[in-house]
Image (cartoon, rainbow, N blue to C red):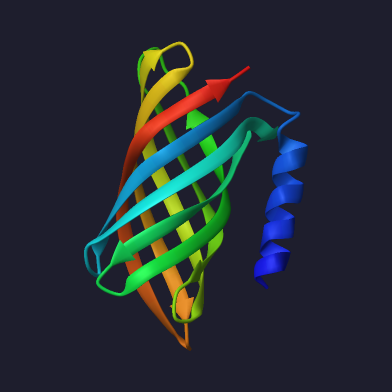
Length: 152
């Protein structure tokens, strides 16, 4: 299952890179607030206007907390609402979370992008998610922040 998701992620993003402006979110911080505190570091790449007005984004992350170290991989879509100052965006995605067992996650994203320079922005993002594992599910609420770099 992990190999299939990785293959789909690479195939979708490799086709998307030719469509619009590329962006990368490098070493972002994610604080999980619910059900318990955790700290996540992730790296993601994406492309604007990959599916019409939608952007595709995919990446991986490592999380540490009370339950040990967790590896995450996922992909999603974003819709940007561009303004004269800050840009808003929202979207959702899917992912795999590997710890003691492998879990499947469905997540949302709602964020604010704050411009610093022409191709360099900071973002703050609220990430609600449902994580399914072992016949049960957990609700996770995270707040993510970090730099976003645009290429091209």
